[in-house]
Length: 407
Image 1 (cartoon, rainbow, N blue to C red):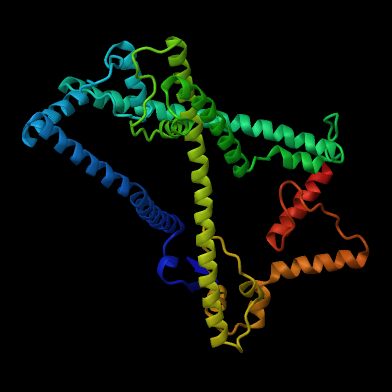
Image 2: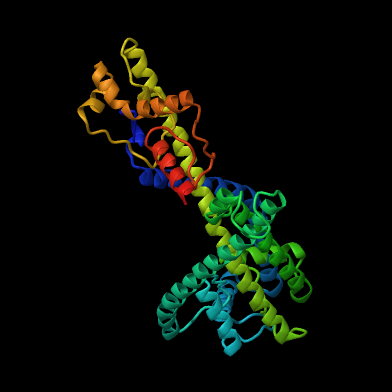
């Protein structure tokens, strides 16, 4: 990336997209390493204690019943195979009746995949590959369309609240006619809600759905409220560990109503969490852009300091000195000989200096002339979505102002 003609080393030579990709990959790797360290520190001691208790029980059982360890392990392996097929010690609902199969395909197309039910036959596994390929793609499309409509509704509601606030302040007329609030109404036409407000609304909505669903799961499934919240996040985020799965017992009170409520809560929760993940990804991308911009600016400031220290007696044009805040998505290209000499730090003639700054000089002369004649141009700070600028942007603002006044 270029800044004032100086080339930055390392990541500065990569374009913005590659820099974002590399930085995100590094951050995800660090995030995974930190997560692995935390989970290992929390869960490993419990795993060791459980393994020790199991070995003690296994040894006591073989002594009590006069069995060899090999025979008992063979029997346990057979039970594991039966468990994969859906056989449990306690009575549970049939896995492959129509309602059980419908629950299974719901976990497939939603990419939850609890894992408590899996096809055991070759035909079922082959059919799952093609069925999941189309079903998952269609469901992701549905989630994207849901996100678009959800953002549209949120933007409409927030825009209506914003308009009410402007009317209360007297900025917008109450009768809807264009009056003194013309510029505010024009800017309101392109108004969009902040991504942080949208993220907050989705967080609140997801939390409300999770709390309501947990209040239903706790008495019916016999889980604690915290375990119910844990299940809601694992299911709604489509992680789907399968350690806790709802609607698996043989009988429930109000069984039909409970299964319908379970389906509605999972559908609403998955849609909201999916939308929240997309909005959070936008915030993460903005944070990465901010980090890259800061790193780019620091690198370019160092290069500029070295350039000024090495050529203290060189006459530098004003627009080279003033170029401090450079966007990481913008590469500055200068093709003329004058620009090439100017950015390389060489001496330039007065003719080249005036030619490179003729736009700024013209604007300055115009402003001085208007001030001397006693009628400086009055412009709003926000006109047609543009703010006052210098050079070509200022000329465009003046032209837009004249056009809006003529209208």
